Image 1 (cartoon, one colour):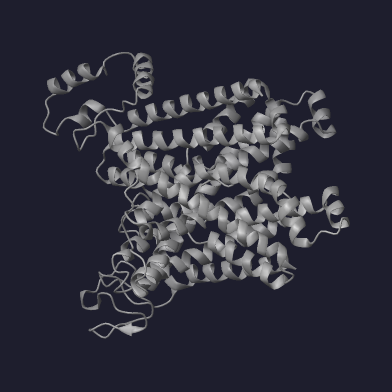
Image 2 (spheres, chains in turn orange, green):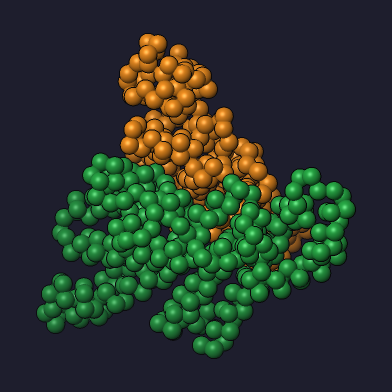
Length: 279
Length: 305
């Protein structure tokens, strides 16, 4: 019963978020970059001095919060999807190679995974993005490269048992190379599980990106991001709390939706490494 | 036990070496330290002179071993902004970070313990689900958002607690609550699962058969066994909490290592960033080692692996 409930909650939260992100730019709202000096810090649902109506109010520069929230959501979702794709490819590749080839290659890859887990992810991201400079592409790649371990561990575990199965053994006795076996026999078998891991990791990555942007190390202005909007709103917490609260609510809806989605998935097929949390 | 101990310590040392290697590459990525140390109008000769003084003209492999030696002595170079050693700046901030991390740790574990017992004792399915949903909801709120909501409620509206800085106990409450509750859902789920496992054990049936009450069996018999996995995971998470301190410290202007790192990023003070990241990673490795060894002491089955 709980799981059915979490599935309903997941689907409705994500549907709200996707509709918000997709439909808002299509509506006749304001330009997310457009500034209006006559309408700085307009409260929710009120009009500026020059008579423009703002549903969710404006920030200090008089920019429309509603359209900025939608644009920021698209940016976050894009970075998240990119990062999940990168980490999925890297993690599945390394995990399958480690589990199939075994020997020193496995020791090396799993050692790398352990090493990466021994540095808190936030710190690694801060250090690297401070040095190479943040951009949307860099962020997606960086977040992806630091999140492959969850996929790698699960993929390796599955490869270890799959490589002993008859269909893999028979292919090998007929002269199939490791690359062929991994591509044709292992990959299709681990992919569904990897997508489950991905649904869990997506939420983690969205939070990570928002945290980096909050710290000023993620998405850079003029492009908006929820984390950055919260950080900008912090200075006006007493005066205009909605500046920080609205992007927080948007983040909550997306992250909670993804969290319940992965919970609904994991209750169907237990995945070993999914519960492994890494910040 | 000795073999287990030696193996685990060697493993940790290898990890530290890996962290140092990562730091070495990060330093190189940051750019030529000679150029970073000089002002923009430095001439080519100046740069060459500093390169020689810093030993940057030597082969990479020698520089690498030199770097390891320096790190082992705690020497990460001089801060590019303040003329003091980077490590001393970081070390100054360690007590504040530890204070925040440990308080959050105890608070989170204590809350999980109390709520877990309530969930077990109550007959009401509604109460159980309510607690779990609240914990899950908390997990979906990023640390900085939760922190700001706390500030908004308790500092701005109610004016009960200060919103920033460090000093009295009241300064500690909001940051610790923000950081400590983040993992609550995980702890609760774990505690529930291990209590459910113990519930099926023979000794529990025996205790009930002796005529003991529900509370007596739970507190006297099941709890000591059920707490073990919770404490282990919480111990490992003490390391993860250190990562969470970075954001929490920024939200509440808490003068710890994390805030120092973030401030150094905006000043492009690379030696301080790398010294800070290294020190927190080192604490992380040491905490994990201590937890593993303690667990090995408490539960003999672990040593076999």
